[in-house]
Image 1 (cartoon, rainbow over the protein chains, first blue to last red):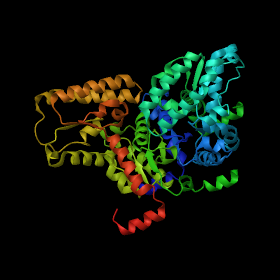
Image 2: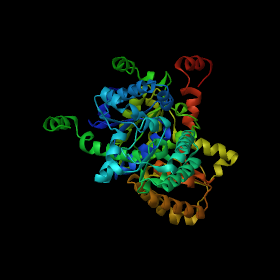
Image 3: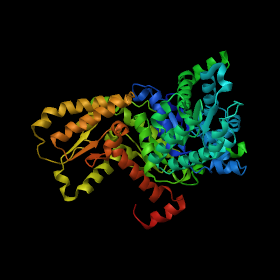
Image 4: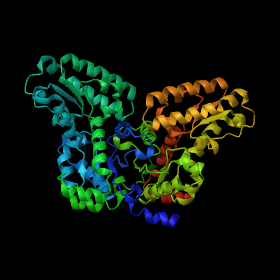
Length: 268
Length: 268
């Protein structure tokens, strides 16, 4: 039996019954990766183990610090992220998810380099916010919490062109400082502090008067708990999980021959 | 840059800086896998993303139902589990963890077939209980909650040869029925019910008078929350995470040349 199986597994797709698994680039950071996989399992609403979405999660966390690299104009992390996405592509994954917002500053470069789909967390989150606002989207007073790199580079910046007022100006530095502190606390495992500090930060932001608060760093998603149930909180990890489930239902789970036949008949 | 990276990733170990990642067989079930990865991240006590344990998690959940297979004397799941462990071995993983207790009914077969180490969750859990009891280990009144296959096949059965009394005999069927119901509830995502039912079950077992209660199914670990903080609750997923961290610290993180030199000087 053993030699037989060794032969079988030289074709990794055999493990997935011919279906193409989801590829997950983990380790940015490790708590956020675990949280994403938990949300993916929960939202899949599968009744049995066998009905859950197959995935390969590659967590090689020795990727250069994204925020520091961007601050000095380096794209060292991009190279490492591409190495991981290529590896997942090569092992037969049908789409790639990266549960890290900051990494999406390079989303276009990653998409351009891959032959499979990157399920772009930032793009789908922006679309989800837009479609929930309808014609009022432009006037939305939206704030994003995230790494300094994400915020400075406007990852979730909104086209609202009004003024956020004096109270925001007085507090904007403190908000970024606190968000960075919470993200670092999650990365070092100080979850109770991080959760309480995020709850307090959200309360103080609400008093300034924003319509939506985007948890624009997956470390915040990892510890938000019930906070993300409030209507004004947008959790990109939640939206990414939904999009992965949609991908799986419409493209991933179909055996390759059916996908091929369908892709000839419609533009994907 | 792209061709260059494509070439690099034909050697997957390059992604891990020459270190050998942990291989995780996921999907039995998907919530338990996510919980294990969360505990692994938490217990690693890493300060930065880059210091977390590198891993490849292969979640191809289309593995035949373990309990049903064992009930009819089939080893179909073993074949599928071996396919997954071989694949992880082939991609360069230095040790394998399987966060599923029932799968450990085949631990000896899996160990015999692998050339890398299986970090045997059941073996290390039994050792952890034994070493915490000292010379009193034999008299320990220990009960395990798990799938019917695990319980019937004595996965965590203890050598205690006394009588558990009439109250246990009257309740043993109800305990197994309730444990199975909770495990199924977790697999289908009914977490709030599962957590409350587990808390109630633990309370009723305590009233019978056991020294330890082993959460002998990773679905129970996935939803136990703070229940596992009590001194009489043994959580194998917690113990598995500790053992994986020990493995990483002593064997996994050393570059291959250092490992080789060391293994000549000491019996591993």
